[in-house]
Image 1 (tube, helix red, strand yellow):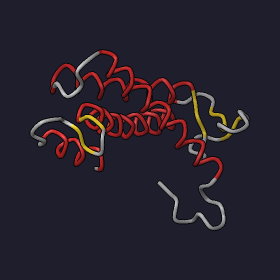
Image 2 (tube, rainbow, N blue to C red; image 1 turned 90 degrees about the vertical axis):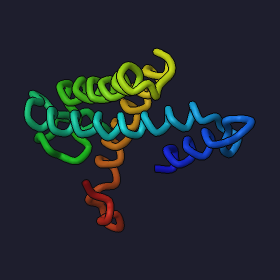
Image 3 (tube, rainbow, N blue to C red; image 1 turned 180 degrees about the vertical axis):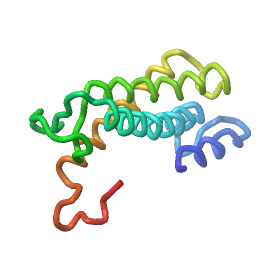
Length: 136
């Protein structure tokens, strides 16, 4: 939401398209990357739980049951990339919010990294004492 509001604020400027010293293009790319992250995480979770052959805990790479917080699988990880790339490509080709192929790569990479960080958080903090508020 912050990136979306900042992009609108920057685009409404009269001389330079900046908000807090950052161009509206960067704010829009951040917004698209955040949406791509949401889709990537959903793809990873749902495909990984349904079709993941072997799931591993991201912190130790030890096998764990499907659905374990912080678990990753090859199928879920690939689905994550497909989800992030799909939304980034849509923003570039259909909507025109991303201005270049490099932007598609940045948004897709950011979505992938954020999904992996979310798994890391799930493995290390979720369901731990004092972090009960942190859940899916």
